[in-house]
Image (cartoon, rainbow, N blue to C red; front, side, top):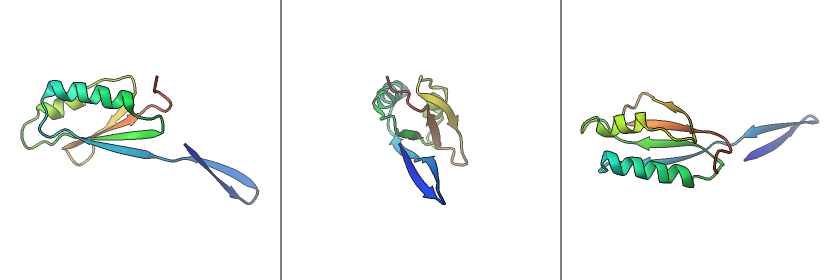
Length: 96
């Protein structure tokens, strides 16, 4: 999705960033893989990031599952300062 701004006779396009979140607390590694596969397949093309909340204090199983997870729509993963979250950057126009 793009928005156009007119400034002094020129047109500038900038991409709007649409972000979604999913909380995986209480899930098993197997249910996380199924849930992420389903969620990524259903994401609209205008979503640019999916923040995955997996936690980190109750063990590392979900953290490792999310960070090793692969899907054709994931361009890259961002591991920020919050060790309980991983951000999936979604490839533009990757929905089949």
